[in-house]
Image 1 (tube, helix red, strand yellow):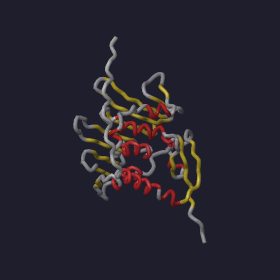
Image 2 (tube, rainbow, N blue to C red):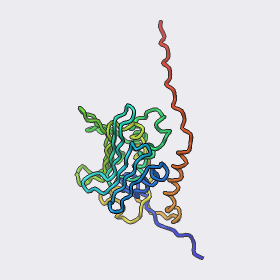
Image 3 (tube, rainbow, N blue to C red):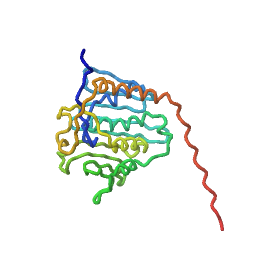
Image 4 (cartoon, rainbow, N blue to C red):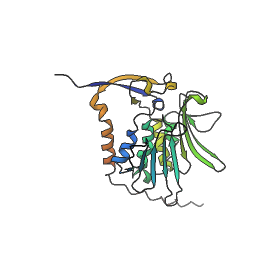
Length: 257
């Protein structure tokens, strides 16, 4: 009687060097756990998912001259329209940090966070010749850029300043809610390595010398059902009651002498 199947898994750190990964890590929970509708077209290599309220659309498609991932959100209440985009080799787990926060009913009820804070806590530092924060190894950078009428956040991972050394980049418009940007930076700052296929071609070529890769073995069932567990966990999250937003604290009366 044969034992359980064992597979090799590469654990890549830092996670922003791991490469894209399986897009289903993002698309499957949106569709199956959060009820985003899909418009299948077998003749077109694109995915389009629309939120239940029809205000947000996520598009994924191979584009050699632009970002593979784009998410656009229509105006809502007093908030203007916003959009984000991610390059093809942006790790799906980092993109999921954004989409998981977007679909979390409780996230919007919390106080507005500082998107830089998760990076600071992870040891990212301020550069001397530019704004924003840079990862401890100097390979990843996040910046809130404001100048004139321009207001946006962008992130990039590159092994040098040479344009050919760029691994991936992300753009988040300035009207993107702060808690969603923080969901992205929190996932970016996490120290846990990301599992990938041990095939060296799965890790971006220009990142292999910089990444720390440890090959380990896992049960095939553990690797196969990781996505299913994620779908189930996010479906259970949506069933939890949403806490009421905290009422604003009344200002303390000023003391007079």
